[in-house]
Length: 340
Image (cartoon, rainbow, N blue to C red; front, side, top):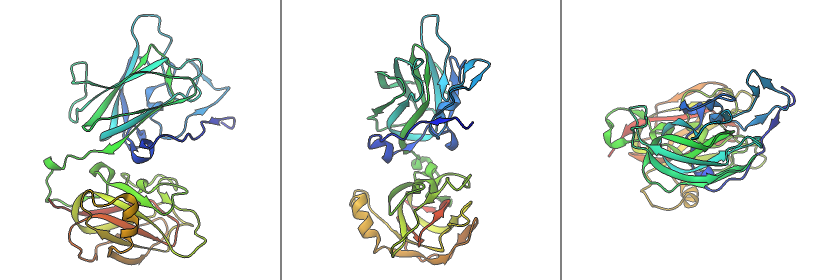
C-alpha cells in the first residue's frame, strides 16, 4: 500500500551492534504459543524488517497492526507468548519495539528463558527470570541489557496485562556445543549456527558482513554484504571469525542476485588467532600481513564459485575476505575439519 509509514531507524546500545538478532523469523525464530493473538499474530513481531503502519488498513478483527497484539483483557491475569530463538545463544540484550502502538501498548513487560534444545518447553520447564518487569512507552524502543553467560533456546515474553509489541529483537552470540559434536566431519566453520561471526570491515553501506554467514542462498540483493562504490585506490575487505578452529578444505563464494555490482575478484588471507590476542581494531592491522589462503580468483554474476585449491596454512581461526575492488557478495562458506 502506497500510504505506508515505516518506523525510523533508532541508534541502539552497543549490544545491538555486537549481537545477532536471534528472534529473526528469517533465520528460523518462531512463536510456539500465545495466550491470545486476536488483533495480530505473534509471528509479525519477529519480522526482521522495520515495523510499518497503514493509517487506513483494517481487517475483520479491527485495525491492522504490524506486530503481536492481544484483545483487551476483561479478566485477571496477563498475556504471554513463547518464542523459539533461531538458534541457541548467549544473550546480550533485548529491544522491545512498540512502534505505532500508542493507545494499545502494554504498560510493562518481563522475560523468562530456558534451555531446551530437544523439547518444546511448557509450564514444567526450567524457566529462569531474565528481565524483570520493565515499564514500556508507546511508539518507543525499550532496550534492556542482559547479563548471562549461559545459552538459551526459548523465551517466554509476558506483557502486562495486554496490548501489543511491534517487534521483539533479541541480540546475542550463537552458541554451538562443540564438546558434544563429532569433530571428524567437514562442516561450514563460518556458518552462524556453528558460531561464525563478523569482526571488522572496510565498509558496509548496503549490508553488514554477518549476512555472508546466514544459511541458504540469499533471497535478494539486500541479503548479503555490499559496499558503496569505491572511488579511491584499494579494495574492500572484512574479517570473519570461524566458529571453531579448523583446517580449511573448500571455500564457496556465492554472488546470488549480484549482477551489475559483483566484485571482479576475491582473495582470502587467514591466521590462527589465539583467544585474547588483541582486539578487533588490532586485528585489522594484523590481518594485512596474514598469509594467503586463497589466491586472487575472478568472480562472475549471480553464481556459486567453488575453490578447493587452497594454500596449506594449518589450523586457522579467522579469515580476511578481500573483495576486489568493491561490490556485493551473498554468502561465503568455508568447509573444513574442526581441530581440538
